[in-house]
Each structure stands twice: as structure tokens, then as C-alpha cells.
Amino acid sequence: MQPSELDCPVEIVWCIGEVSPLVGSLTASDFSWLSVAEQDLVRKMRFPKRIGEWLSGRWTAKQLLSRYLPHLANQQLSSVSIESHPDGYPLVWVDGKPLKGCLSISHRQDKAAAAYTTEKDVLLGIDLEWIEERHPAFLQDYFNDYEIEWVQAAPSGERAARTTLLWSAKEAALKALQLGLAIDTRMIEVHPHIEGDSLDWQILEYCGDLSKEGYRLIGWWQRRGDYMITLAVNLPATEPPAFYLREISLSD
Ligand SMILES: CC(C)(COP(=O)(O)OP(=O)(O)OC[C@H]1O[C@@H](n2cnc3c(N)ncnc32)[C@H](O)[C@@H]1OP(=O)(O)O)[C@@H](O)C(=O)NCCC(=O)NCCS
Image 1 (cartoon, rainbow, N blue to C red):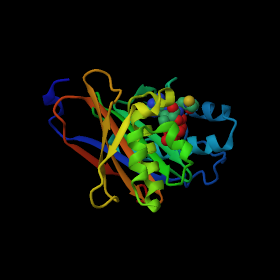
Image 2: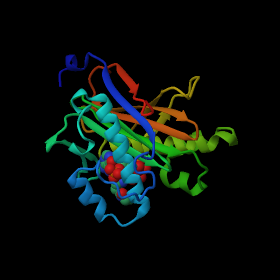
Image 3: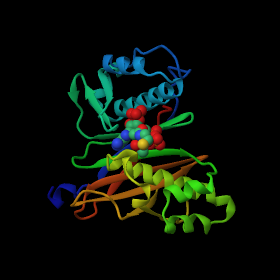
Image 4: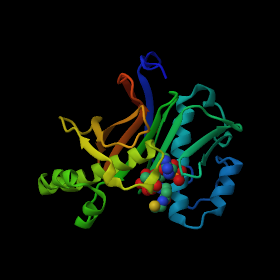
């Protein structure tokens, strides 16, 4: 990719939603908004928790796409099919044709989040985590020495938020790298900027990242109530482009 191709801001749209108001219960049987391929997939799932998360992620992602992309605005949600690559990342089809761009999905507790960009050569990872205390062994297993020190340097009331932030940032990066948990999470060192209002996006720097040659990872984080949201972007390491992170409200 030539640097000039990224001169315009990269627009990333994202949303956070409650579990589908349509399906209500996580094991509801109204699958009319799912494509045939999605219906086949969900019928093969055995665990209600997984079914609920999968449905809430699909619902939230379809809401995002249909509110953002004009050509999907009047389409049936069932014409959009969000399937999974064997490595786990989502692949989107519209009426049997691949949708250009990159979609990322996360689900946690009663919420799901999705992010999407039409930009070529830009991979996204969004992650949503419930802020909670974790056992000290969790830090030892997943964080490096620098990160453990950063968590422990915080006042005790802030440690759960810092731990959750680092964990979420690593998961977002693993999604943007399309690696999942196949690698040791200590190989991705996270440096969150903390300036002012954590209710707005703040920068995440990644060190020792695992992007392929010529690519780099950058990210953002914000706190929403009891949740931490992180967004990682894996893109060509040309001039850092401007980003426009636009939240799409699902409540309208
Ligand atoms: C990707 C991963 C970091 C997901 O994080 P998580 O906090 O557990 O779950 P989240 O709800 O935030 O994200 C799940 C979504 O990530 C996406 N995802 C899964 N694997 C992915 C990958 N390799 N690259 C990018 N995105 C991926 C999917 O959209 C998935 O939702 P879906 O299956 O309903 O489509 C991680 O759990 C993972 O690697 N999962 C896939 C492999 C796996 O389950 N391994 C078992 C343990 S080794």
C-alpha cells in the first residue's frame, strides 16, 4: 500500500449493545434474522452460554453493519451471514458475496461489541471485558514483569481496572493479528496512556508486537461503567494515519 492511500482518516465504526432485544432469552428460537448458514451453525452448538454469546455478537454486528452501510439499510438481516474462518475470526457475506472490510466481535456478560472498517489492509480487534478482580496467578500467567509492576503500582481500588484493561488490550491485539490465544500473551506488551477522562478513547501502545513485516499495531481503550473496551488496529506501518472512531448508537 502506498502511504498516500492512507492520507484520509481511517474511519472505524463501533457499537456496544445489550443482548438482542429480539431474542430476549439467550436460548430463544426465533432465528429468522439469521442466514441459513448461521442457522445451521447455531443448531450444532450445544451450550446455552455459547449460543447466547454467539447470538448477541451476531445481532450486535448485524445492527452495526445495517446502520452504517447504506446498501444494507433496507436488507433483511438474514441476507447478511457472519460466519467464522477456521481460525475463529468473522467472515461476512451479503447475499452470498464477501463483504469488503474487516469486522470484529466481542461478547461479555449481557453485552456485545462490534467494530468495522471498510478500509483495505486494516485489521481490527475489539474486546469487551467486565471489570473484575483476578487471582494474582492470572497476572503471573499472562502479563510480563513490566505489566505486573504497572498493575501493582496502582492504588488497590484501581488494580482490577488496570488488570482488565491490560487483558482486554491483549485480546483486542490478538484479534487484530488474527492469532487468537494461539500465542503467549506476554509477547504483546501493552502501554496504556492515562490522561484525563477514561470515558473517552485513550491511546494504547503495543511493544514487541507480532505484526507481520511492514505492519504495526496501535490501539485505544475506554471505560464504560463496569466494562473496559479496547480496540486494536493492525495496519501498514507507513505514516501513522489519522483515525476517526465513530460510535453507532443502537438505541435509536
Ligand atoms: C480470540 C480470543 C482472544 C477471543 O477472546 P474472548 O475474550 O474469549 O472472546 P470475545 O467474546 O471477546 O471474542 C470472541 C470473538 O472473537 C472473534 N475471534 C475468534 N478467534 C479470532 C481470531 N483468531 N482472530 C480474530 N478474531 C477472532 C470471533 O468473532 C469470536 O466470536 P464468535 O466466535 O462468536 O464469532 C480467544 O478467546 C481465542 O483465541 N479464541 C479462539 C480459539 C479458542 O477458543 N481457543 C481456546 C483456548 S486456546
